[in-house]
Image (cartoon, rainbow, N blue to C red; front, side, top):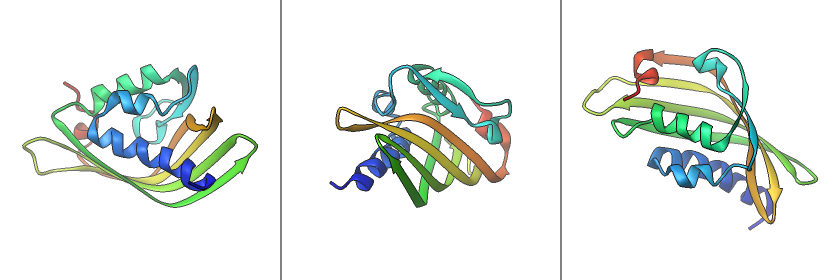
Length: 144
Protein backbone atom coordinates (compact mmCIF):
# COMPACT_ATOMS: atom_id res chain seq x y z
CA UNK A 1 0.00 0.00 0.00
CA UNK A 2 1.44 3.38 -0.92
CA UNK A 3 1.97 6.11 1.67
CA UNK A 4 -1.07 8.26 0.85
CA UNK A 5 -3.39 5.25 0.69
CA UNK A 6 -2.17 4.06 4.11
CA UNK A 7 -2.88 7.49 5.58
CA UNK A 8 -6.34 7.70 4.00
CA UNK A 9 -7.16 4.18 5.19
CA UNK A 10 -6.82 5.42 8.78
CA UNK A 11 -9.05 8.43 8.05
CA UNK A 12 -11.67 6.26 6.33
CA UNK A 13 -11.56 3.75 9.18
CA UNK A 14 -12.34 6.54 11.66
CA UNK A 15 -15.69 7.19 9.99
CA UNK A 16 -16.51 3.58 9.06
CA UNK A 17 -15.84 2.29 12.59
CA UNK A 18 -17.72 5.23 14.12
CA UNK A 19 -20.84 4.40 12.10
CA UNK A 20 -20.46 0.74 13.11
CA UNK A 21 -20.11 1.87 16.75
CA UNK A 22 -16.89 -0.15 17.03
CA UNK A 23 -15.55 1.99 19.86
CA UNK A 24 -12.48 -0.14 20.59
CA UNK A 25 -11.57 0.03 16.91
CA UNK A 26 -12.04 3.80 16.84
CA UNK A 27 -9.90 4.29 19.94
CA UNK A 28 -7.10 2.20 18.42
CA UNK A 29 -6.80 4.71 15.55
CA UNK A 30 -5.53 7.46 17.86
CA UNK A 31 -2.13 8.18 19.38
CA UNK A 32 -1.51 7.53 23.06
CA UNK A 33 -1.55 10.70 25.14
CA UNK A 34 -3.35 13.92 24.33
CA UNK A 35 -5.15 14.62 21.06
CA UNK A 36 -6.09 18.11 19.87
CA UNK A 37 -9.84 18.08 19.17
CA UNK A 38 -12.00 20.93 17.88
CA UNK A 39 -15.66 20.34 17.06
CA UNK A 40 -16.69 23.83 18.23
CA UNK A 41 -18.27 24.74 14.88
CA UNK A 42 -20.98 22.18 15.70
CA UNK A 43 -21.02 21.84 19.48
CA UNK A 44 -19.90 25.32 20.59
CA UNK A 45 -17.15 26.02 23.07
CA UNK A 46 -13.61 25.71 21.82
CA UNK A 47 -10.97 23.16 21.04
CA UNK A 48 -9.49 20.97 23.76
CA UNK A 49 -6.73 18.48 24.36
CA UNK A 50 -7.98 15.09 25.52
CA UNK A 51 -7.11 11.41 25.43
CA UNK A 52 -8.57 9.05 22.87
CA UNK A 53 -10.46 7.36 25.70
CA UNK A 54 -12.25 10.61 26.62
CA UNK A 55 -12.97 11.45 22.96
CA UNK A 56 -14.36 8.01 22.19
CA UNK A 57 -16.44 8.00 25.38
CA UNK A 58 -18.01 11.20 24.04
CA UNK A 59 -18.68 9.51 20.70
CA UNK A 60 -20.21 6.54 22.54
CA UNK A 61 -22.59 8.79 24.50
CA UNK A 62 -23.47 11.05 21.57
CA UNK A 63 -23.83 8.23 19.02
CA UNK A 64 -25.57 5.76 21.33
CA UNK A 65 -27.24 2.51 20.22
CA UNK A 66 -30.54 4.28 19.43
CA UNK A 67 -28.94 6.89 17.19
CA UNK A 68 -27.99 6.06 13.62
CA UNK A 69 -25.22 7.96 11.89
CA UNK A 70 -23.65 8.14 8.46
CA UNK A 71 -20.33 9.87 7.74
CA UNK A 72 -18.78 10.48 4.32
CA UNK A 73 -15.56 12.21 3.30
CA UNK A 74 -14.20 13.15 -0.11
CA UNK A 75 -11.91 15.58 -1.94
CA UNK A 76 -8.90 14.58 0.13
CA UNK A 77 -5.75 16.65 0.21
CA UNK A 78 -2.78 15.02 1.93
CA UNK A 79 0.46 16.76 2.94
CA UNK A 80 3.25 14.67 4.44
CA UNK A 81 6.35 16.05 6.14
CA UNK A 82 8.65 13.53 7.81
CA UNK A 83 6.41 11.30 9.93
CA UNK A 84 3.46 13.73 10.14
CA UNK A 85 0.56 13.89 7.69
CA UNK A 86 -2.22 16.44 7.48
CA UNK A 87 -5.41 15.45 5.69
CA UNK A 88 -8.10 17.89 4.64
CA UNK A 89 -11.40 16.47 3.41
CA UNK A 90 -14.90 17.61 2.68
CA UNK A 91 -17.30 15.92 5.06
CA UNK A 92 -21.00 15.18 5.31
CA UNK A 93 -22.80 13.38 8.08
CA UNK A 94 -26.26 12.81 9.42
CA UNK A 95 -27.73 11.59 12.68
CA UNK A 96 -31.19 10.12 13.22
CA UNK A 97 -32.91 8.60 16.21
CA UNK A 98 -34.19 5.05 15.74
CA UNK A 99 -37.90 5.13 14.93
CA UNK A 100 -37.88 8.72 13.65
CA UNK A 101 -37.63 9.95 10.07
CA UNK A 102 -36.15 13.41 10.71
CA UNK A 103 -32.40 14.00 10.50
CA UNK A 104 -29.76 16.36 11.70
CA UNK A 105 -27.16 16.96 8.95
CA UNK A 106 -23.86 18.79 8.60
CA UNK A 107 -21.52 19.70 5.74
CA UNK A 108 -18.01 20.96 6.28
CA UNK A 109 -14.27 20.33 6.25
CA UNK A 110 -12.30 17.90 8.39
CA UNK A 111 -8.65 18.55 9.14
CA UNK A 112 -6.93 15.51 10.60
CA UNK A 113 -3.28 15.32 11.62
CA UNK A 114 -1.68 11.89 11.84
CA UNK A 115 1.69 10.62 13.03
CA UNK A 116 3.50 7.57 11.73
CA UNK A 117 4.27 5.27 14.63
CA UNK A 118 5.91 1.89 14.09
CA UNK A 119 4.59 1.61 10.54
CA UNK A 120 1.02 2.70 11.42
CA UNK A 121 -0.62 6.09 10.97
CA UNK A 122 -2.32 7.28 14.18
CA UNK A 123 -4.58 10.32 14.58
CA UNK A 124 -3.07 13.10 16.73
CA UNK A 125 -5.48 15.96 15.96
CA UNK A 126 -9.07 16.14 14.74
CA UNK A 127 -10.93 19.29 13.66
CA UNK A 128 -14.28 19.82 11.97
CA UNK A 129 -15.31 23.18 10.50
CA UNK A 130 -19.01 23.14 9.62
CA UNK A 131 -20.13 25.11 6.58
CA UNK A 132 -23.82 24.32 7.10
CA UNK A 133 -26.01 22.41 9.52
CA UNK A 134 -29.63 21.48 8.96
CA UNK A 135 -32.34 19.75 10.94
CA UNK A 136 -33.34 19.39 14.55
CA UNK A 137 -30.29 20.10 16.70
CA UNK A 138 -31.94 18.09 19.51
CA UNK A 139 -31.15 14.97 17.43
CA UNK A 140 -27.43 15.86 17.32
CA UNK A 141 -27.37 16.59 21.04
CA UNK A 142 -29.52 13.61 22.10
CA UNK A 143 -27.93 11.21 24.61
CA UNK A 144 -29.34 8.28 26.54
